[in-house]
Length: 112
Image 1 (cartoon, rainbow, N blue to C red):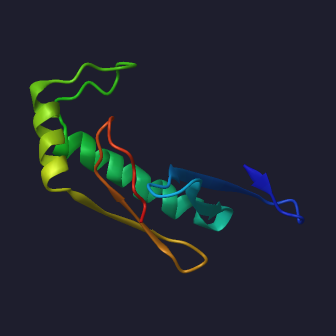
Image 2 (tube, helix red, strand yellow):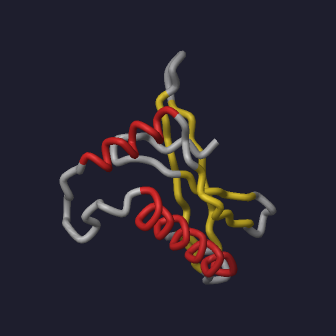
């Protein structure tokens, strides 16, 4: 959470990835302002619900660190071979669009 000079608050979501060639990191940021909270939460909830009900319905989401079932392994293999994208998208005030895609616990998120 960060604040503006006017006293408003916003979220900054940052991803840093080590560069394959050379030193340093590539850093990507998403700035989420109060006027976008509702759309972002709706899209996030829709994406999570889609994964829970359509992609991985047998997974135990209530457990703190659920064990993977055979269906989870199959879903991850499918996701690795052919990514399944969610239809949820968020348009922010700076006219960028963020979309969510399905990932497994072990995959890194690539927001590019």
